[in-house]
Image (cartoon, rainbow, N blue to C red):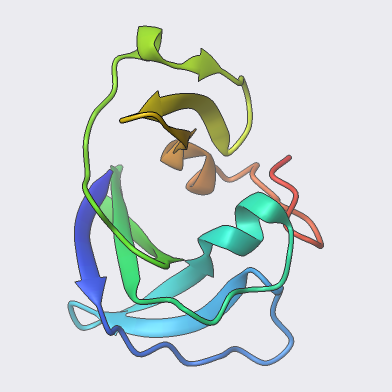
Length: 126
């Protein structure tokens, strides 16, 4: 679902929004909701060092849905085989694994596009 990684994307806050919503940006001439990945995963306040936005996209019944995830750094986009991961069912963090000896959380981006998904206050991924 990764469409693009954009550096330096300007994001404008939305008054009264949840802490994980950094705001809105413009991408390809359309408004783009930008979520703070750290706040979604850790349930804490957004960090200030966002240097990149990962643009996720999904096509649904003729309509394209996109959103951005603000991250500190985007090193690479890759695919992992399911057998390489310890599966966690039904949450935004779908699995965990190691890449070059470093722990990595694997997201299920389809959860973000689900009509039923609601992270709640404080960013829990339930």
